Length: 262
Image 1 (cartoon, helix red, strand yellow):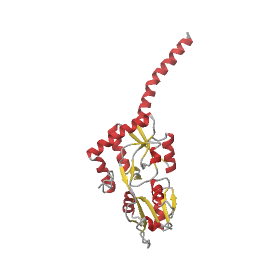
Image 2: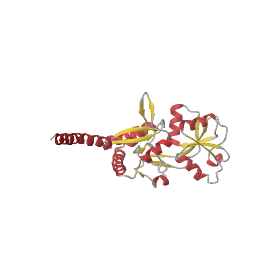
Image 3: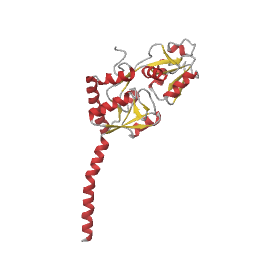
Image 4: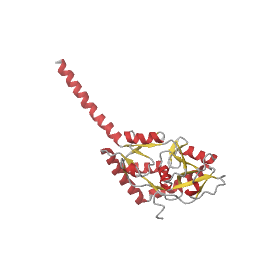
């Protein structure tokens, strides 16, 4: 009789816990975990104990539209990409669309168009305007970004000495100090950082190419659901003019549309 009573109590406990477990699982499923590096002004950065920036505002707007909450997971760039592969994060805040990445992940709708560009120290006396002007010179590029491949594609003979650095601020510091002859990075981000932080850099020449960033998702059932929900929200935000509004706030122009088609 006692065994029967204990069995009934155990069964009741499981039944009681089950709704709570389901509720917890459902709550967790409505959270989008976003991988990001420590600072990528003006995409995201921390100021006055508040995480803010273009992509912070963009993702918050997407989350509001689609009924999700955003959870940021901060690591170095290598860790961010690894976390996407292992499922520790659902997506990455800024991830350029590249063929090799498209073989692994499904991308959502484009939300930012960026162009690779050259910048040099404002004290530089070199007449650098084109990629050819960098032949035989040392050029800094951020490790793991699409700009490494952009330079390599435009310089197939390897006439430029590429030096890669972990972190955007390290890259900028190397160029400002003159330890490298130039850097190649995103034009919009460079102009925003130079203006906001008074960096001793100047952007030179014309853009080298245009890259598109979109939210990447794993090819799983959850990834497919997040892709569909965020795409729907992005389309609504674009139609309402909200994407352009957020972009203008941080960049002074609409970087959510192709700059080549303007």
